Image (cartoon, rainbow, N blue to C red; front, side, top):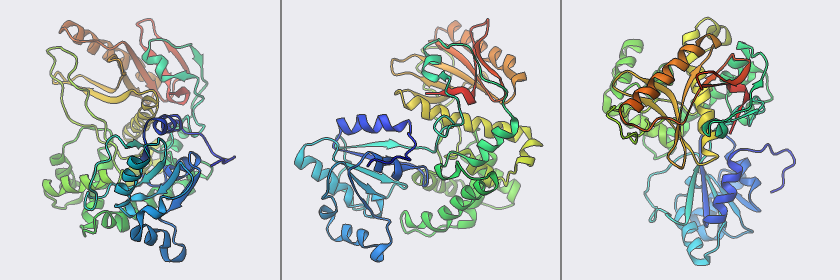
Length: 424
């Protein structure tokens, strides 16, 4: 639908491409990240299952006659389809019947149990993960430097200007939520707090009608926040809760709760770089922990701007999470993927972008400009070790910085780019 006030998202082009290739597209992601608004922009008719009008008559109609709610001009939006899971099979059947492309967009903020769903939808319904806004999408990055260009080994040097540390803290606490972009920071800080409460009070139960220990789930979320942007194990999360909160929780419960958080798109972990290097270096296979937006971690830590100014270590992890959220959004817009690198020689790269053609690029993320030299040396060291062991070395190396005032290439070949100048 035409919306004059619609703010474009990087996922727009992907949705258009998928609508040309599949009968239906399912846009999934955390609540309030803009799924409905964006999907509506691409549709010509819609039905909102969460609309409370008439005692939720849309939901009741869908439960009684799923095929009836599919009628309408296409592409047709079916918002929060998981409220009536049988709609999945109804859409798949409708797509099979007509054979047309681009008939439906489904949105979902939770992955339901497969109970009542008979078919995976493979080949008919394509799934897309939508995230909160990147800094470029929210207008907080100039977009002077392209991530794709970095991965292809070229950038134009650019003076980007000084960046205020308080502004970076604002980006973290405010988060990428569309509704938070025009409010004061004090007002913006309320949204992630309410988000967490809504998940614990309502969504956790509604996902499968199973009652869980809300208190322990909140403790686990706080532990995830304390371990944001690290590769902490489930056992260490358990021990962290015992040490900090003096509460006992077994590893099996931690694993079960993490699965629920994943199904609610509350977490968005960073996968380890696969051992495709053909080298003798052993790669660790631990995922890097992330909540779906750094603002959630800040809220769980009760982090105020003043607290973060006085705790640069915590700020550094939250800044890394902010950058890796954006890198994932940018990379996926050109069919690349975000990973992290960690081997058994204690070498780490904060981020790895793997290109569709098999090439890859290594990134370090640093808050301060005074850390650039050390970060660049680390990247070059790992690159040389991979080459020496017969592996496939990265095609380019880059330091993403918070407080750098310019984008440029160093004499050693490493790029330096401020996060506030980056785009896809």
